[in-house]
Image: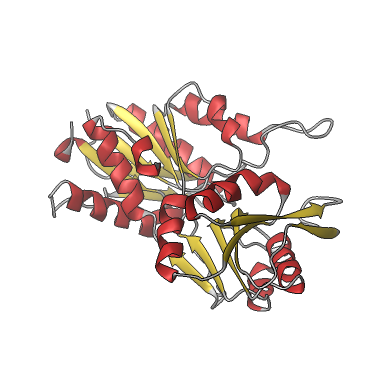
Length: 318
């Protein structure tokens, strides 16, 4: 089931990425007329809003592209679009969530707190979604919060190609914290180089008190691997620690550029020669000049094609 029975729509937050995914999917299907579906949002004077589809989707496989970063309007819009598609008799509803918000709330790490990512999973399922496609979940166990298929993609398939094209000598991979060591280790293994880890002490959220380096980076060109740049405090401090320990250069690679607060200013003033991110979250107008964006459009389009053709998705990452 493909071609005219597949429709791709996008929420307001990811219109540009959605359009590029639709265009890439059209190329793969050899259908140059395939475009992003038409939808609109009515906003009431009190701030309430109502998304709607401006074309028939009866019997279609509907893919809805929307990242769920703050504000919460983005998540609510995705839920309403799923509900609208269900009520419009879509055959299947697949949420394409390049950045899955609330993923850092994956467990009860202190008394009397919520598990936000589980709640979001429940909300999406209750709205009527049949499948989730997402990129670099902050915690892999979030897949188990769903009772529907979850295709968790990896930006490594994009980043490793980019790194290899740079042809960096004396390359070394590093993780800005112990929690990301598994991810960084996979990069080091694939690229055939050593791994260093920065161990941080965090007294509270978004604050790093101290950082210690595990490993030798002297005279190495280091690439820091992370999934999220939020305030940029951790990754910038890690970059400085690496340079202080003799690294020749440091680059940062992170899938999701949340970049809240003073993140852009910190990146501008950092030791990084380059900061590479994906377009899972649109960059603000004041984005750091050090940032280079790698597009995920072809990857998501390829996955949609494979789902519709019943082909393997895991083979993309081997």
